[in-house]
Structure formats: C-alpha cells, structure tokens
Length: 522
Image 1 (cartoon, one colour):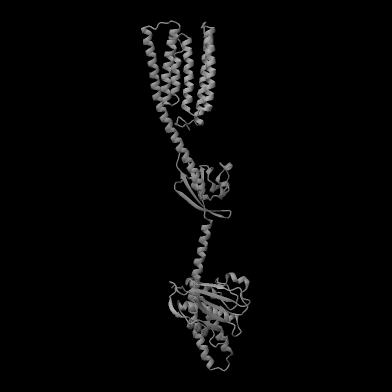
Image 2 (cartoon, one colour; image 1 turned 135 degrees about the vertical axis):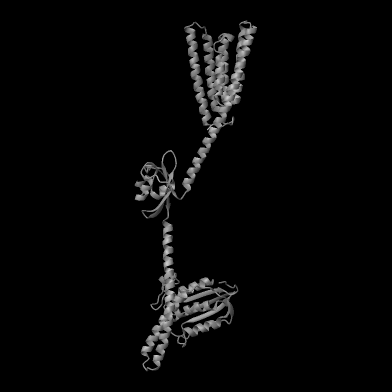
C-alpha cells in the first residue's frame, strides 16, 4: 500500500503517477484539439502559440517520465508534473491575451487535481505556484504589449489570486482528510493482512486437521494437517467431505438440522482412529468447522493400559491363590512324613515329597515376584547370609558349593540380599548336577561390593541372553520363569547392578554389584 514517507515511492505510488501522467496527457491533447479548432473555425490566431506549447509539453513529458525512473520520491514527482503544467498554462495565458485569456481557469483545475493526490504540502505549493504563474503571465503580457492595468483590473487580479489561494486551502483541507482516511484504510488493510497471515501460520502449525464446510458439506478450506490425515489436495476444494470420510448418519443429521453446540464422534479411517468434532460457525451463511484429531496412539496406549490393569488383577489373584495353596501343601507334606513312619516302602513317599517340594518352589517364586518390595537397610554380616542360603538350598551338602567371602558387614536389606542369592543359587543347582561345580564369591572393590554366582552347566542359550530377566522366560522345564525376573526386580529397587558374564566357556556367571557406603532408601 501507499507509504506516507515522502522519500519513499513504492509500486502503488508509481502506479498512481503513471495514471496521473496519462490523465494529464489526455487533457493536454484535448486542449490542443480545442486550440486547433479555435484557430481554424473562429479565426483564433494561435499557430505559433500552439507550436511552442506542443514543444514544451513534449519536453516536460520526457522530463516527467525520466523523473519517475530516477527520483525515488512521490511528492517530488508530483511537484515536477504540476509545475510543468503551470509553466505550460502560463505560456497559454500569455499567448492568448493575458488578463483576457480564456485559459486562466486551467490554473484552478491544476490545484483541484493536486488536491486529489492526498499531499497537503504539494497542494499548498501548487496554489502558490499557480498564483505566481498567473501574475507572471498577466504582467509580462502587459509589459510586452504596453497594456495598461487599470484599478478595476488590479481588483480583478487580486480577486483571482485570492480564489487560487482559497481553492488551494480548501483542497489542502480535503487532501488532509483524504490522507487521514487513506492512512486508516491502509492500517486496516495491513491489520487484515497480518491477521490473515497469522491465521494461515496458525493453521499450518496445528497438528489437528481443520476443515471449513458449507451447508452442502462441501470443503471450502483446510489446513496442512487435514490434508495429511485424510489425503486431500488444493484442487479438491469444493468436493463433498463424504468423498474422503464415511460419515455416520448421526453426523449428517447434525449437519442437516443446523444444530448448535459441539458434535463429537470417533471414526475409523484406513488404519487411523480419528476424533471428529463439528461446530457451527455463525455468519451470514451457514458454515461448519470440522476438527480432525488423530487419536490412534492414544487409543493404543489406552488399550495397553487396560491390558496392564488386567494383568495386574490376574497377578493379584494368582498371588492370593498361591498363598492359599501353600498352607494345604505344608499340611500334606507333614501328613506324608507321618505316613512314612508307618511304611517301610519309601518310594511313594519320596515321589510325593518331591512333587510337593516342586509345587512349593513354584508358589514361592510367584509370591516373591508379586509381593511389593520396600528395602529396609541394616548392617548385615554377609558371610552369615551366604552360608544360610547355601544350607537352605543344599541342606545335605550334596553339591559341595564352594564359597569365597570376605568377613565384612555392609548396609543392605538382608531379606532382599537372600532373595537374590537364593534364586541365583537355585538356578545354579538346577544347571550343575555335579559336586563342587558351583562357586559363590563376595568381595569389596573400591567401596563397591560384588557378588558372583557361577555354575558349570550347559550355560545360557544365545536366544535367551537378551531377555533372561523378563517374566516367564526360562530355559528349564521345571522353572516358572519368575526367578530371574524377581532377581532383576529386587536389584532394581535396591539400585544394584546385575549382569551376565558372557566370556566364560561353559556354564553361567551372574554378577551383582552395589555401593557399600551409600545407604539406599526404600
């Protein structure tokens, strides 16, 4: 739009100068035609005058065109054009009788045209120059032709000059009002343009799809997110929304009833779950704002949470069931022992005892994994904890477990330490049937304690190494797959590190590390 800085001329002002130049050219040609008609019809002797004015007009026109190319100021270009007009009119007045010239009115016309350009200073300057041109033409004509200017003529000249100044003042006032209105209009247009750009920017950055529909459900506008979600392009504006989304009957009914408020529904589109929201836009014509939100990931997360809640409920039920099963098993085991005192055949007793022991281990694993863990730190004698675990897991010393342990007290949760060691040792016993093939070592290295449990069994299958600590992952037919999962859970809650040494040639080697100085909080 137009810039009010007089030193700057943008494309809009340049276009106005070109239009003004064209208008003045047509007016000049019309004037020349009148002069030519007056010369031939009414015997108005103006051939020399017509020739001179034509030459000056061509010269001034060339100067004006060159000025528009070289001078970057709208106001200066206006003054050049109007000044050239005043010079030409001055010649016309001088050549056509001075005070009696019929072309004096052209000076007032130039002032009026200058007022249409919304430049107050230009209008006032043109009014002053018009008065100077008028006085110059009158008195030059009087001096050259010995024409005496009487008192009545002086009054007429003063009146005419006053009219020029009055016209200039009026046009300057009009130009000022017009400039103020033009400035307000430009500000409104600029504000509208900025809001439109902001609207476009907001729509382009939104992750939600936005579609504007008319009352016939035809697409009027949309943003980039909507184009990506439903696959629509710019040349498809005007298409019905039903060409891209299969709408439900209730959705269409809401549209047809021109209902107010928000209508919301979920829709399956290809592999996506979309949330559609429809709002009526109030205006002269009924239109609708359709918001499309991709909630596919939200629904997947909700489904996963529901499955986890279900698994958690099953886990609680299994823990309760395991707890209720343990008590009858203890009773059955005691009853079998009493029966064995009265029978010399121990074969049946051994089978029952073995199976009850296996069931008890399975129940213990489930309870250990399901119970919530809260560390309670105590100063614990590690040698004692390790020997207690060995005695419990190998009461008859059948496997001859080798223990290497420093005589130290460290701050740990003794129950959690035993739980980790018991599970690792139980796995080692299952994997190493030969005596003296299991080694347990405990030592301190730079205030970090390290527990190592190693066996010489078949080792860990490569396909199980990456997920050994996940629930229900086991390489043994007798295990539940909860032992190592419990170990990882206990280590995690106590901030211990557990790893598997894969560099050994045979068997498995588990390493647990913890900080011996920092007391962990449960």
